Image (cartoon, rainbow, N blue to C red; front, side, top):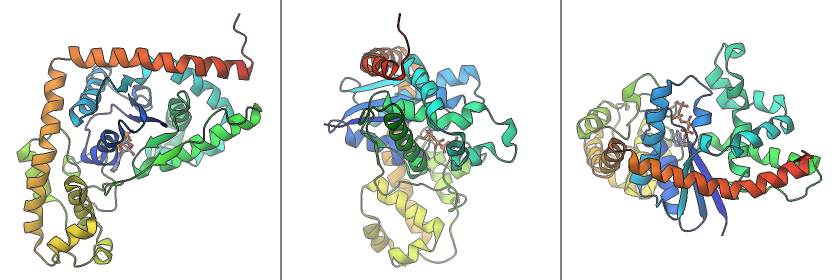
Length: 333
Ligand code: AQP
């Protein structure tokens, strides 16, 4: 059995992309692998987070994991800052990775924008911490959305360079990404060429997990489309980003092949398709959001899950980190 590590940042506005691209896949993988699912609060602070909101959002992500159907007993659910090994190993990886590797990361370029000199040092080093998250447990597989593929390649580079520099062949595994499902890259509802994102200023660009039936209905009704009827073939859909995105969302939620969804709605008016998509989203996403909100109202249970998860994660990490310290030559007097 391989081991899975994956994380979600507690940066607010958990959306359909996070759910379909990541969290729902976690649910499918549990049982097949040893799994660690992490609320990556240390990643979140690479851009400014209000402290009170960070605490609340951390509980929300953990609650979303549980609401989506992750089992807290058979998986390890925890928050990153509760296991000091992540930061400890990240420091070593900061010294293994090269600045040039970090400078090439698309996410850094996008998030730092034009004012790169003013971005936090943590934002630049983000992929090094992500490599530490994964390799602290020698995870073999990481389920993520398409946008994280480049960071995973960097994790593999760091593992290889560490193994090589310290003459420790095969010490760290060369981790494989698991990118699957009909929604590996959910796009904005306002612009089919931009990914759906927590930080998009327009709330109409995304469906939040906390949206009620009314909000979901409004957002799908207002979602941008082109004036043509529904595409006739998958190839036709691929040339129309907004239509393609909505079809992919439908296929992912309904758990159908996109080709079958295209066939079912071929040539129809968008309004008919949007009504069907609304019903589906309200029926399948609504309950996850309301369960998540119920769980955060009384955080005692969520906190106990995180506490227990941190203890178990620490126990897995400790012998691996001890071995890394020995390999690097750190004296442990
Ligand atoms: N649009 C998306 N489609 C599919 N998967 C997505 N993921 C994110 N956006 C999409 C996947 O969700 C997991 C958790 O993401 P995250 O919280 O670590 O990070 P993120 O990529 O920073 O999320 P956002 O929404 O895009 O936030 P901002 O606006 O801050 O950049 C990951 O597996 C990710 O692939």
